Amino acid sequence: MMMTRRSFTLGLAALPLLAACGNGIGGSGAATIDARVDSTLSQMYSQFPGTIDLGQKAAGMLVMPLVTEAGLGVGGAYGRGALRVGGATVDYYSMVRGSGGLQIGAQQYAHVLFFMTDDALNNFRRSPGWAAGANVEYATPERGDTLAAETTTSLSPVIAVIFGQSGLRLGATLEGTKYTRIIP
Image 1 (cartoon, rainbow, N blue to C red):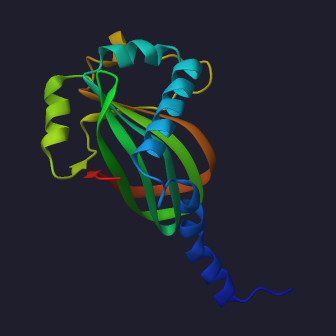
Image 2 (image 1 turned 60 degrees about the vertical axis):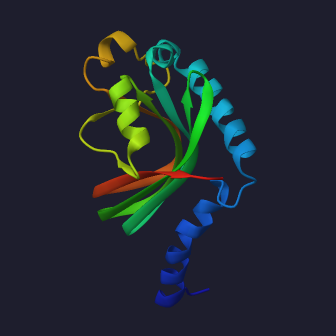
């Protein structure tokens, strides 16, 4: 069967919608998000034991259990998660990312933002929408790699750990990420 340019374009346009199906859009609310956050933290702590110490030293953690990202020239990502302070959920957030540039593909991953200082946590909680910027240190550990709080807390007040990637997204892009408080 020959695929026309129109059907190919429509298929690519539908890719982000299809990819978003598993990320909790329209889920059953806070209980679902909390269950996914618990599962994500268990997975992270078992795969990367150095994050246990990081979590204990953090003033708070924003856990995004499943972020779905897709792009072809123009891309986007979406996920929902919870802010935990002292081990308890205090707020729920959505994450939206837009990107543009040379890119193709789709992927899903989890990420956790560790707020290493009270100031960083308070700035995040007080803002109407917080954009990840140059003050965030990103760590993408591979299996067997370790993260130690002693080496990373002096580098940045916010540390992002990205893990559990599946799928493939290639390219060079300019991106912006925004976190917004939600009521699930």
